[in-house]
Image (cartoon, rainbow, N blue to C red; front, side):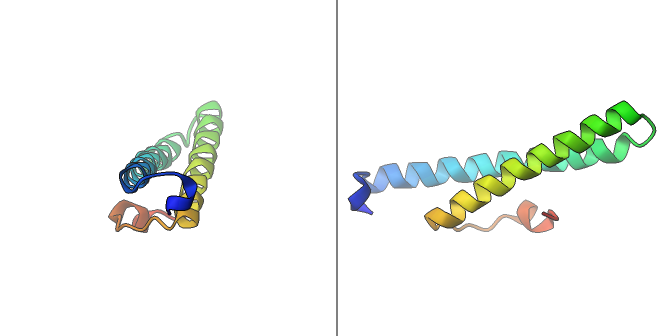
Length: 84
């Protein structure tokens, strides 16, 4: 890990920052799912809710891919519940 020029503390800080971003993205995704389920009657709201859900899914997936690539592992119950 020293090959990248980062110290152990910097790597840990980067990992925690990535985990924090993933946890926030999980919350946004969950809220987007709720918003979609509540927007059934209005076409405009439904369209926006679908786009918001797709964007949050894309963002969360990108963060998860980055974590996997960097070897960051942690347990997250929220993440297990999501259907990505």
